Image 1 (cartoon, helix red, strand yellow):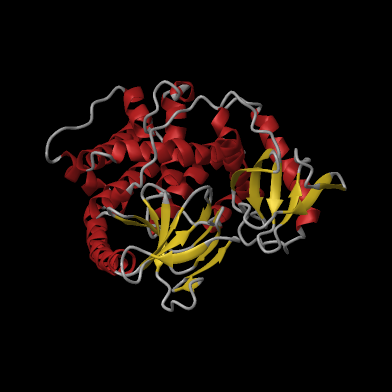
Image 2 (tube, rainbow, N blue to C red):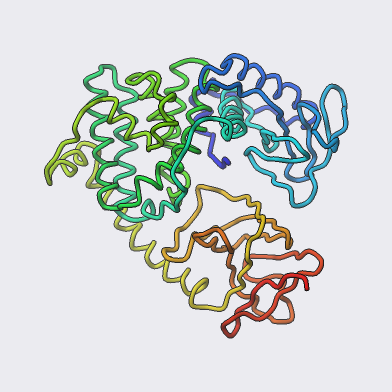
Amino acid sequence: MDARPFSLLALLLTAAGSAPAEEAPISDAAGRAFQQAQSLCQADAGRLWGASLCGPMMLVDPTTRRVVASEADAAGALQAQGGLFVGQLPPGATMANTAVEWSGTRWTQLLWPLPEDAGLRAILMAHEMFHRVQPTLPITSPPAGENAHLDTLEGRYTLQLEWRALAAALQASHPSTRDAAIMDALAFRAERYRRFPSAMQEEAALELNEGLAEYTGVMVGGATPEARILAALHDLRAHVGDRSFVRSFAYATGPAYGLLLNEIAPGWRDRLAQNPRDLGTHLREAMGADLPAGADAVPAAAARWGGKALRDTEITREQQRLADLDRLRARFVAGPVLRLDLRSMRIQFDPNDLQPLEGVGTVYPKMRLTDEWGRLEVTGGAVMRSDWKAVIVEAPPDARSLMQGRGWSLSLAPGWSISAGPRPGDYVLAPPR
């Protein structure tokens, strides 16, 4: 699932001074988008992953839920029209840049409007086409985690130093310069794994999911090797300003490590099934080099990449983060809450804007969630439990109006209701009797 900024990459890939074209109706431009997607997957011809990326694609207008698809759905919900297939996505169905199962068909789903620039559009399409075929590929990954360590001072500090070193490696004009920058990037990653024992597994899970998808977008969507380098550099720089890195970091590291592995260890993708580890470990093993040892190794490397100024900035942020955590615990832990247990949940959210709440879950500032009990719209914060079995919002302030509260609104399916929870002021979801 994507929620990524494109403006900088647009400047890199398009002519300076060009103005975006006026947005066309979805039905007018869908055919051209599908033709571009077909051209991309045919040009790849299954070489990247040993499987074709071609397949059903739908464009969805998030305002009207209108669907325009490249082919018919298995259940017959769409109607043929001018060589395409059109219809309406029902309430509760997922709307996002992602892969979805709907009406008996597995789709690459893209939200309208698509990026105006052809290069940006190609990267987005290929990213999501990978997600559609991903379950069929022999790629295994560790169980997903929250990556909460990437919201701490040391986690953010070492990650950003790693990004800086990776950017230099991608731009290096000589193998020795490239390899020196790679070794610094790997040293920062190793230090993070030393400080946080679960970091290697948790990062690998997202890197082998969104990281590989973004790498695919860059490889298949980039028209030339130079365009791919520019796209990977954009991904490394674009996420520096993210409020949190816990879900977005792999969009940056995936293309960078993937392109470097292409150079140093051709055929690395074939080994993912037998060796489901983070991409940094794959690169370190391919280089056959030992990381520098000693207490001064990482500080010395950090000094080469502006570590002092970065640490000063991150210390200030950490102080604000701890204050924010106190406020969030007051809202979602100490104070009265409404707990909604999840059964067959579908969720839409921005992966760049999450806040881990240690021991509880992750705070989503905005989300749209549907389940068999109804729909939850969040605009002012909600907590997804770490086990993904429940979502928590602040209790409604008025017992006479249980369907909305501070920054959220709830629509329940027939038979479902809200009842008193275990603590005074708490509420829980009550199933039909």
